[in-house]
Length: 249
Image (cartoon, rainbow, N blue to C red; front, top):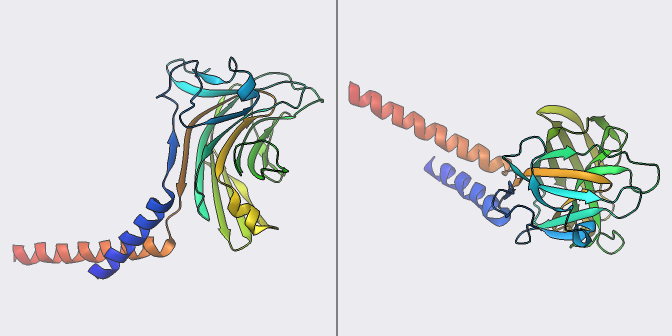
């Protein structure tokens, strides 16, 4: 049984070491600067350094967050990317706060969004993207395929959790908002090579201001590794309890 425990721990460790975690709460950066050591700016985040920056939390000024601003009434969004080697099964968590700007019918109609991008350029014709979640200006939260998931309010924080699981060309996306399950979406990936080329987390503000905090991306352990590890730990505990009982007799 020690062998099973060892195999489980090794498999779990391999998943963690190959893919690792991406975590950022934006506290280590200087206020009113761009977090250039980790995040690559694009679009309006590159051209407007005043409104795209490390800012104070609009709800809690003792906390630092990342602020993005997409030009209202135009097609000039603010985007940023962080390199990540995606496993086929992972979870992304983030806190998202949408501003109160009135978004007209012209230009981008999505406020904050989170996705997966190939490279660090916004044009999906040359750098493919998979949208994961979008906050539409009409108060609807949309899945990556723009289908309805729920509603949200501006001027408040939401904790978002998304589970991405790919088996072959089958894709499952599961969604939570503030700990409540919103639903799931299943689809067939039309081009697996494009999906496998996605190598950056993307945060964006299509129109208006969007704030992001507590980004955490982590691989989901291989089920067999967890099971083997749990079996091994259980048996190890059983043997320990047995020895304790034997010592007491």
